[in-house]
Length: 70
Image (cartoon, rainbow, N blue to C red):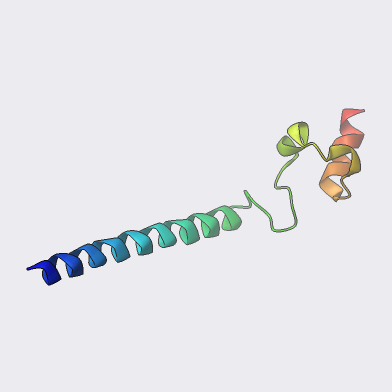
């Protein structure tokens, strides 16, 4: 009986791990596909407002944001 409980526990643990992994991969793919996150850094100027590296940032979006705020 103990062997059966261990197998069941391992099964549910593995299912939970695969579900979590699938959700992370799917969520990341969704964000990349909808242009909410870009791999080169910032996704939108809304993030520049709170960025601590704004004054030294070399990304084009940060430069445009700096010009618009002046």
